Image (cartoon, rainbow, N blue to C red; front, side, top):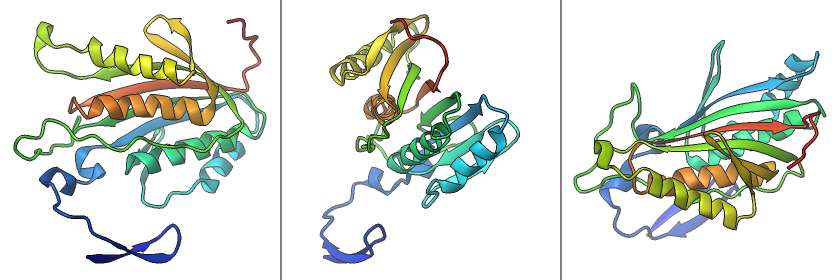
Length: 223
């Protein structure tokens, strides 16, 4: 039995974690969990809007690196999505038309190398839960399980399953070339895409998903 400090509530609690599986000792950072995003605000005051939204968002427990192209956000899935939700919703509060290009990735991609414990093919995570924002968002969503196996690898099965889950959530608005169209509260749109990515990530080591989110668009919505 151990006593832990609950940072969110500032209280002590007792937990009995039981046996810890080898895979559980790998942190999200070691596994390559994170997001890369670019927020574009179509307003003459865009610098203030973006900087204010970034400053107001909770960065606790995250690694955040910004360069001249985009911003990297690394950390646990829930915290990464909390941060994206807060930044986009904060900027949307200005009333300006904005878009966010978001790439979520997991599973030791690119320059990051890691070795999974024997017998473990991939590491999943708990689904994220995001509080409603009251901000309507439209998005194009694409999901990419990066399977080995050449032409015999079943990459479409996990994709179709994730899309069906999104339909069940009532957020799918249609299909366009190379993407599924989502429409709903910003929190629901982000959580739907993230949970599809997390769900497939329990079966496939390296998974990425891409979202282009539009908020406060002046274009007429006809579908």
